[in-house]
Amino acid sequence: MPSHAEAHFNRGNALKDLKRLDEALASYDRALALKPDFAEAHGNRGNALRETQRLDEALASYDRALALKPDFAEAHSNRGNALRETQRLNEALASYDQALALKPDHVEAYWNKSLLLILMGQYLEGWELFEWRFKYDPLKHNYPPFPKPPWRGQADIRGRKLLIHGEQGYGDVIQFCRYLPQVRALGADIILEVQQPLVPLVSTLNCPMTVVAKGDVLPEVDAYCPIMSLPYVFKTTVGTIPAEVPYLFSDKEKVKVWQEKLGPARLRVGLTWSGSRDHKNDLNRSIWLKELLPLTDLPIEWHSLQKEYRQPDLEILEAHPEIRQHQDDLTDFSDAAALIECLDLVISVDTSTAHLAGALGKPVWILLPHAPDYRWMLDREDSPWYPSARLFRQSKAGDWAGVIQRVRGILGTF
Image (cartoon, rainbow, N blue to C red; front, side, top):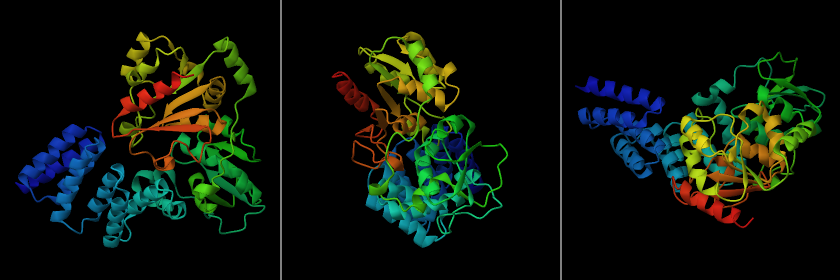
């Protein structure tokens, strides 16, 4: 019965939210066996397939959904995501635009389009559309109501107290805090609110300000601005990114402690291979430690920069004591910064570690999936955000082995 199809569909949605994607696909398939013209089930099946990187199948599901329901704005937007991940960028833009033509207030389509434009280097329009994130349901929790007016550069801020608050992940705050000296140059008195583990690190920024840990009582302010709106405020283009490094600094006393602990200098390389499991793109950006093992027979002193481990990685670490662990000594980002200062190179997937090393001006090799995050752009081995970074990209989706092989080849020449 059709009602049974709805039940299987809803079960698939719940399983997808739990990241039990194979089970979600099975539920969508059962729904479609009962109701083959169920456009929403075809669309959500496409979403689950996209999350497992089965992109051609995902596109086929979106196309079927749109054949059944041509005005299905959500399917056009999600189809754009799959096209973006297959590097069919102009088609992806067309899909987002079609979604917006059908539904001019489609928040997710605006958000998706902003990320693609920034990825393509079309920064001015991209940062403008990036402001739609405040209305995007998965991000709304970052932006609670605030009793003061928002500031986006439209008003004279001289002598006014401006709250700039961190948002989203640690790496986002590290990347965008570079703009605070420009805000200060406008005459603002800055109150910066960030997550507690970032407080000692961002306090090293060469910018007079008051740093407050998130959750602590804020002083009175006149206006506020989320930190990731600053590229929009300053009309940032690829050529005008404030890219001078370092702009964050390690604690000299903590560096001395690490130097004594590590002993005589030799070629030291830090590794980070996974980020937060809660990150929406974790399946795409994180890898397992076992995939890095081809590197570990090189004559290098290896240091894990991971704060947390997943069970399979703990088993690998037990068998490979040559990878030194420091999680108990990394209480906040100033500890990680001091350790990184003692290393010759950091190799990291797209996590806050990569941003930290880049902000410190340390050599960092960043391992990127075939469909990278918007900030890393396309078809380049360098980053306009971090002059000390080198980017290693998958040549096809899921091909971490090829990335590690290239990294090993270059490391072997050191």
